Length: 122
Image 1: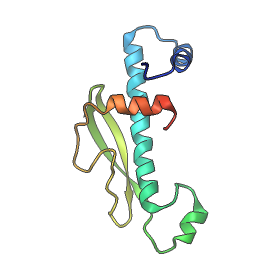
Image 2: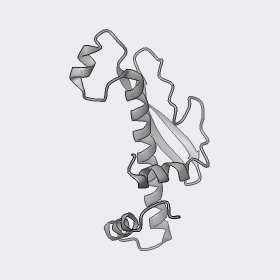
Image 3: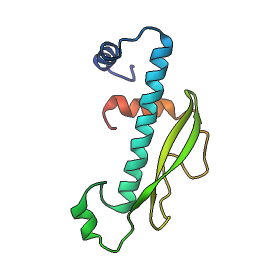
Image 4: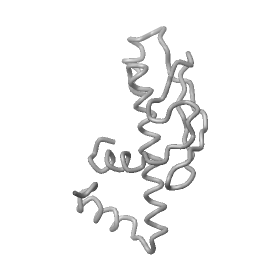
């Protein structure tokens, strides 16, 4: 069973115009970084109870916790080192589920993330 539909793979090949295997690996690494970054944003949305830029929902939760920038984190993966911006909250209560605090090695998570990306969940 294929992780990604052939149509998605063919479209990606047409769009990126790969010249060699290194181009493919670089694209997979960037896709992986983007999916991880977005999953961290979703984690914080879940914690706060509203999405980024949703002013109405944030106003309804006046006086509650809110976003407070990012901190940089470099993690080790099968694709090499990946730089992420970990979202923060004002109260310091946010505990990312995707990449827990203090964890820097996430080798093995790549297949799961690519599967979610291919299925359209992310």
